[in-house]
Image (cartoon, rainbow over all chains, first blue to last red; front, top):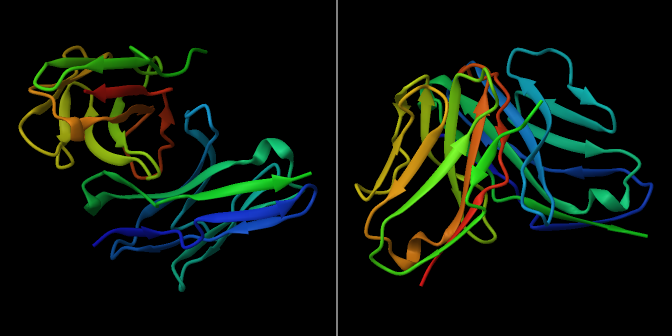
Length: 115
Length: 115
């Protein structure tokens, strides 16, 4: 069965420090995509970063990077130089072909950035 | 360009009533998705359209839920005989294609409240 697990309901980080948000996934597919989204209090889901299962290098987008460890089935999000505006819910998601093209989301991690 | 838009932003209805929620995807995006997000949870997949057809409707909870996309652009999610448990934020997303690697871009959501 397809599954995404985010074990950190809440995380605190000091402004300007780096933080890692954990995500593990379960799939029997060889081809899949992993995504991270940010959801601020306004409610809109904002795409942050994508990692394909065949990508050999970890994805990076500005201050966001994805620590992809395929053998461990983990896709942790690293946010460098945290800003107050990073305070939000963060969701890890996966999509694969044999999952029926549905995207499965984790339960999310709420990040609090302290000044 | 314009992002995904959803109307209405808020809908309050009474138990047993019929509601329609509308989604306008990003122009040129062939794939469209509906999700439901309950408070404190990640989005839950409902249905995925590729063009005009529903490629995967396995997430629809029961036959009270139905969605259409007659011209391959705008989609309407229809809920009959609403129940209090249907109260949630309904999110729409679109992507350029329908593969597992295509990034989905989300609209602001419709908050449905069933009294």
